[in-house]
Length: 478
Picture 1: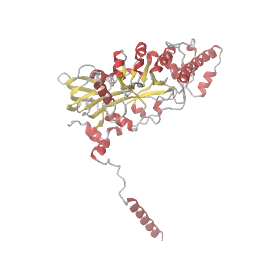
Picture 2: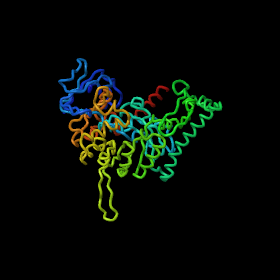
Picture 3: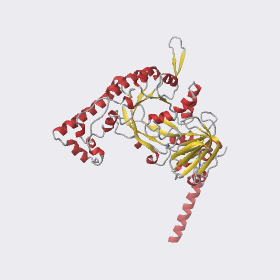
Picture 4: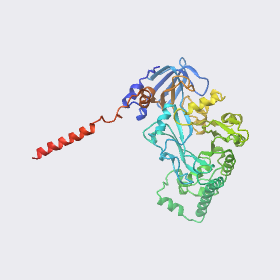
């Protein structure tokens, strides 16, 4: 099956794989596909996707969408086009999954992202174009996460949405019990409140300690943060905070203030159903219930009623079917957790089991096999995670104004026989399966250019050459 595209030539100019460096996006491009899955309505047969720079400008039937005369046209009559998958939560792509500090919201995960990590390469192979990277579950309050695209030499080029939320865990980290884990999490917010109240009291008595400290640390007194503003939030409020310039708040605690004020998302990990209730209590106490998303371990469907009552969306465990064995009868009970949450009216997103074959397409296909509708399964890996990340206007669907992230399959995206052939991110073709050197090496035995070992004896020959050069130099000196 062949895709005719001038962008092949463009990609070839910078290397076998387009992820080796960003290309200049065509100003106007059009993809003509046999089927276009938009995720905003019914699939479009014989459809067209128009892109201008990094944005989609139109999607519709070929006889209804006028292709500009100066647009680069990609012909894919036998392929299926769909929006790139959105990974709602991942700990991959960084040099470490956790810090050793219990409460570290002042860290930023983008400082640990490795743009050349194999994880990002695999994302393109399996059609994932947006990833929310958060730290691991072995934490209490972790670093601020980041939403990235799996393409670009630097983190800045990959960035979609910096500081996309803070990971927290109510499940005990190494060395803690459930009681001490919950106490540590509560204490983090207690310390924040005490700090804010202390700053207000200092302003009342004319103590400028916080200002002197901020200036000594080189903090910027320009812009909005140089001003004070009244605290907002649905949990607790510190009166008089408008007298304190925000720049004078301890930088180690400032991200938690954003959480309390509802300006920073929280991804709360619960490894068991018993932990869900504690997490809901702490979120209510501190006013971030409405901006929280649960990241659940297997078996947490047992707390579905409490989650539904709290109206908190969830990111499900990659283990979609929870299996329990009765200790007396040894009878196994299998529960398809996505169905439980759907029946309770809980919004849910799926997550990959790994970045390879068991990526989001595989999880969605498994969900369909367990009885979930095709539409709901696809939504759980596209539009729903985009909504949870606050990016529903940009990713997860093919519609005017959205990012030009398009994946072309050679068949049904949820079929084991189908494969990703081409990936466009921000209007650029960043993956071409026909030019994937790793696959060529694995499937065809082709050695990627520039990776061959030195021929036998090359080192000895080089040594002999060096010896000859030394002799020549010696003769010249004589």
